[in-house]
Amino acid sequence: MTDERLVRAARWDDVPAIRTVLALAFHDDSLVRWALPDEATRDDVCAAWFGALVDRYVAVGRVDVVEVDGEVVAVAAWRPPDVPADHPVMTSLPSVPGVVAAVVGPERAAHLFATLGRSSALAPAGAPTYLHLLAVRPDLQGRGLGTLLATRGLASCDERGATTWLCTAEARDVVLYERLGFTVVGHVPLDDVGTLRVMHRAPRDAGLR
Image (cartoon, rainbow, N blue to C red):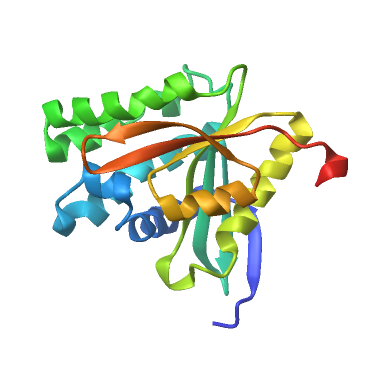
């Protein structure tokens, strides 16, 4: 690769590549390993799970990608505070809980989503924007592509005066997000195998960037 980069908004025809990037990037993520312990099926389930989210965010949220030499290799997906519940994409199939329940069973899926749902109690007040997914293809990690995408989205939030928040189960990612202005405000235990960290970031004035 010659590392010719292009940062842009995602299109519908990017979604298959985005699903693949997400599955590869999150294969060893602590939260995903907790939710999907079967390594043999994890990538396919993760692609379907996160792919359903991306379908929704391309339609009613914000999804940015990085192309390197014409290939989508990194993605950031943001959920705005004003997602219309009656938009057709919000009730389209597959549903996120349905994908997970089909693999791990309804009872286990209910436990997973109830646990993840506890992060909502730690969300910022008002109408925050949620950075739901940030991923870089494993062979291109460590080259600043994730920071590039996060910075682009955060600049838009700053322009709107929007507080942002996220959740991460990876301790090493906390350092990255702290550099971007996020602060850990609470924790959600993932049973006895990990911890989900909830992080907030206040909007920055243009003169302070």
